[in-house]
Length: 130
Image 1 (cartoon, rainbow, N blue to C red):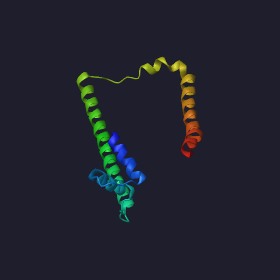
Image 2 (image 1 turned 60 degrees about the vertical axis):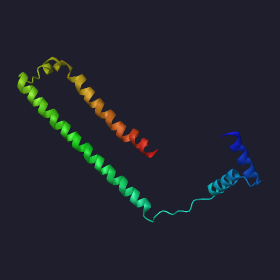
Image 3 (image 1 turned 30 degrees about the vertical axis):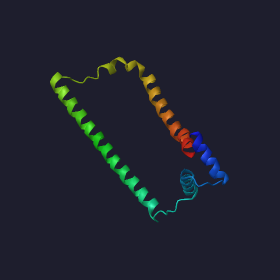
Image 4 (image 1 turned 45 degrees about the vertical axis):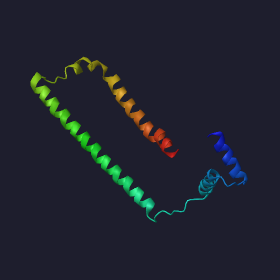
């Protein structure tokens, strides 16, 4: 804001008026800015905004599911083609080497399920109540 604008604003705020065209215009703008705008929203404004948001979210959700399904289908097709071209034969031979570690495998599986249960029962319930 320049010095002249500051001087004009101080004069207008203090109530000192003159016949300068610049000061009259500035006074009109200043008076207009002090007034509250007169407008009202339609009665159903909030519901129409919510409806538009829900419509947009449902469209984007449908689009996301479409791309998810399309990606899965493309992945399966590419896996089938790669398997057919390379002659891949699945084998579970690696499981014979870990047969001596049945206890560790069983403990790990039970421990993971226990941690999952604790998380759902105690930790996540506290996060949703905050």
